[in-house]
Image (cartoon, rainbow, N blue to C red):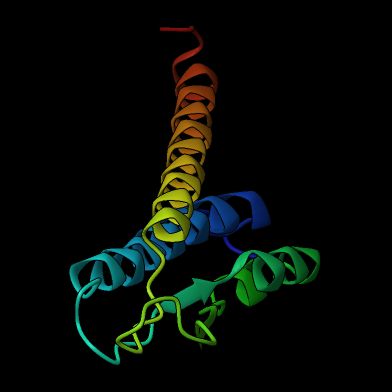
Length: 122
């Protein structure tokens, strides 16, 4: 295995979590934008389980994780729309927390590299 970004499972998982959580937010914001659209079916990007399995297999598997898009079943509103405002807001908070956690992990990795290469803490 080479040296550099994404050459280890931890780095690959951090970047994948950041990218996938941002993609998940796009689905959530699209659902929220279509809250009043008759017949609109909410969609969700699920990736946590797939990412957890890929982590066990190494960085190459992690970089291939794309997640699974599923439609929300059933109708929440009388107009056939399946967007639940409260569910989407909860999903948005969860997605943002995932992203922020990944960013903090990334920043920690960078700090550790600086300490090793420069021989001192910032």
